[in-house]
Length: 334
Image: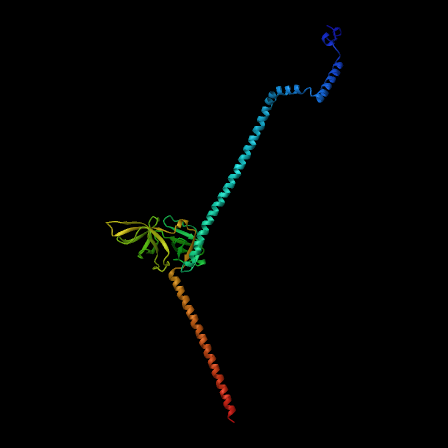
């Protein structure tokens, strides 16, 4: 069919009524009237309220994914902030715990040092303060190493004590350190005095290093659990009266003439850190005697010097008197 013969006129439906421009003008005028009426008389308020009520569920339904997304974001951000706050709180708690432990350690060390300072004037011999560095790496002996040696005046055989009592004795001396054999060593021995009965005996370290024992003590000896053992001072090394150990076990057997007496050292070597190294009593007495002899010699020398000065003054006065007498006699002779 040729294109020129096609009917290009609109259908009858679209040809009915006013034109499109008239419709646009009419709708615009109606919209303007409705806006003015709504602004002046609130005519559309009930319709708007009804429409909002009808559309409210639809709005809430459409906002559900947005709210869920925002809530999820808030939850994740809150969780992250909570985890960060928890980590910070844990770090602060760890720091505070570390400070508290350091404070407690410093307080304990301060208490030990105060006790050592109070003990120093009470000891009758000169002492040197030292610090325990480490335990000697020998599984068959009980020894510790201190940070003072021959350079600081530490000598072999010097007793070592802390604020509780006797720890041991210096056995090896190096220029800047020294080894201390503890009382619980199997080769250590110390003369003791029972503070209750004044009975003297000797104690030695047990073979397993767990404590001390009194050897060759008669089965009928007066010794009880809880008796305090102190140094007797008879060996010329330890000053008398220092606390050493307490009796923990007394076992008397019928088939033996000796009693088994176990002791527990009062000064615990595992917790000792600050110690005092004492000058041995024999050396202290020898040094004291030398000092007294030197002081006596100095006093004698001073007395002799004073006597010589007095004799010289007397001789000078006598010479002056003789010269004066001779001068007087020569003047009276003519």
